[in-house]
Amino acid sequence: MGMVDGLALEVVDGRPPKVSHILVGGITLARRLSPPIRWLVLWFARRYGVRRGEPYRIPWSAVRDVGVNITVDLDARDTPALYWENRIGRFVRRLPGA
Amino acid sequence: MIATASQAGALFGFRHLWVIALGTLCTIFLVEMSGRFAAVSKHTIRGAMRERLGASFFVLTLILSLLVNFLVLASEIGGLSLALQLVSGIPSRWWAAPVGLVVWALLWKGTFSFLERGIALLGLVTVAFVVGAWATHPPVGGVMRGFLPGGPGPGGDPARYWFIAVSVLGAIISPYLFYFYSSGGVEDRWDESYLGVNRVVASVGMSFGSIVAMAVLVASAMVLLPRGIGVDRFQEAVPVLSVPLGRWGFYLFAASLGIACLGATLEASLSTAYELAQGFGWRWGESLAPRDASRFALSYTIVIAGAAVPTLLGLDPLKLTILSMALTALILPPVIVPFVILMNDERYLGRHRNGLVSNVVVLAIIALAFVLAVVSIPLQILGG
Image 1 (cartoon, rainbow over the protein chains, first blue to last red):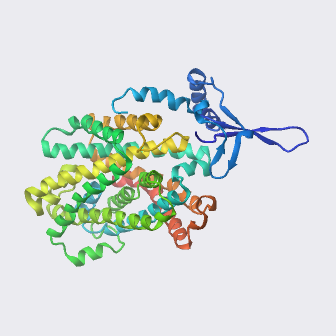
Image 2 (cartoon, rainbow over the protein chains, first blue to last red):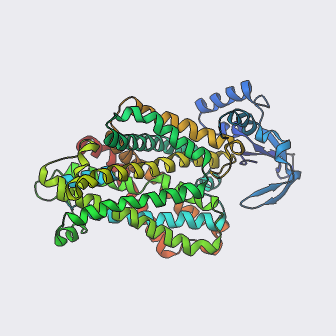
């Protein structure tokens, strides 16, 4: 499905912060990089991305196992995580022998 | 490798043999670790670098690595085109596009094990260099002395000597090799039962390449050095085989150069795609059909097309090779430092973590890598 690119925390006064979502997608990754790369990726994501610049969030309740690999109770095909894989796939399929 | 080893032999006789031996020793250890990591954790070195060391470090090393991979790929496509020029007489720039297309088609249609076995089998032709070196009757004492660490010898230009030494190490300790190898372990579905096989493959496989490189150096020292041929262009290395082996030697030289370059072209282009896919979490695998790993397949397609351009424009493959080797030396520290972290991580490796010997060796390699990185640019200016 992809890499965990970031985490969203839920902060409620008086309680320890809690992980609420796993973030997947290049936008989250880009936010941690230097400004020119960040701007480029964000511009690209807003213009062409499936979620118009918002990273895909997986609720923590879907997480089943956390180890070196993280297992979530979701079908990757039903999520936007494979949007680019599929979109490029449509182009690749048109090439001979693909 | 053929280029740097023949330059070394042509200019400094046997005096770089110890450098090849040192580089091979380092590579055997690092390749063994890459394979062990893949077999035990089912993760690749590159993917784990992202997971364990964070996004910024990953992106920085990715950019450096892609740049070096691109140069290596461009020079290998150049070398392969030149091998075809030697045989056909048609200038190498006309071969760049067909070569790129064939390499792409092999990756597009081939599976990992098909390519792996094909490269290994065809690679046997490079034994011709060992035969050639033998036929030049090198002095045993002189060759043996070459294995003792030393300098350029009386009257030799030290800057040039050490620049070539750095290039030789850069050619042997290639980052793409480790990424390729650990990805291969995952593609071949290695598990812990493969640890013995891995050790054998790492040591025998790397030693084979090393013996061939040493043979190139010895033959160059025997054939080119006395004739004062300095190998400023690939073509000037042809006598390395054509003098001891005659007409056959000429064809064997072209075949060995072509096949060595073809193997490296396939590995470097796959390695680029592996690095991108594993770092960003794309679906990847050479054995998957392109439509099932579309971003992976598209990335090697673009890289091959781009890397064919320098040859198409008529750039000298030897210059590209030497530049890419020196740059490889420059990026070695960020490539090798993660090994010491990853190979000691219990979550990935459990009880197969590095032992004391492996850790001491990898730290020594890191020290060497830092020295190489610091000296590579000044030496490029002084001795390149």
